[in-house]
Image (cartoon, rainbow, N blue to C red; front, side, top):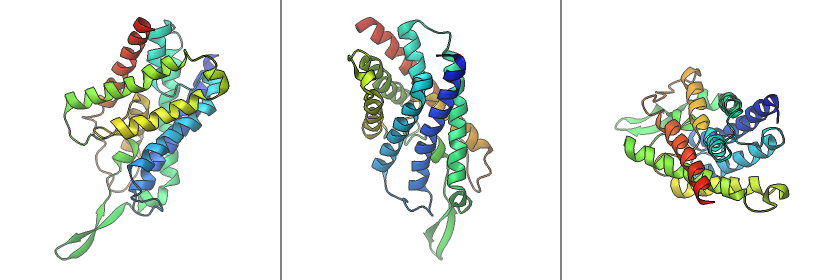
Length: 249
């Protein structure tokens, strides 16, 4: 695979992933959405379908990593580092592009970014926080616990991905991407409660950058004090997965 193919493939695939993923959260969270309040299971499947569509699209060009933690784990396993920067750069560009596309899809809903709340004097409009549409927010803010959650959840992604490569014919059959997509759904359902399961530095950092600059009314903070955890945690989890895979398989 050439550097150009990898770069383009990762941009397109990651943009699709983020468009679907942030899109499903926007659909559930924003007030004037037909999918409003449809819940966590809808969100986890939306992200899983984003992985499915993005990885299948990118696979012929780049292999469809879509995640710096996956790229890092593969590099540690194989010892091939020369193209890591191309993958990560493409993933970051794609993640930001996908977040912008989500904003455009829900432009009218973002402009009407309020909900009715009851008060002692009746009802009034209250802004709906938007950062959770683009990036992760912990339910309990505890840096050590949040970091451990992201490390463990990312290992639950990257180590199985590496091991799937041992199953003869899985990649050639076309089922590998489907299985990884279902794995992401499972991680969301089982491990996503504490932090929102970033498990992907580009998935969190790219949209957070976009959120900072988007002209969303009443958008609130981009929470840069927390932003290092969904970057560092997944990178540690990806690195540990590569080391464990190398040692055990």
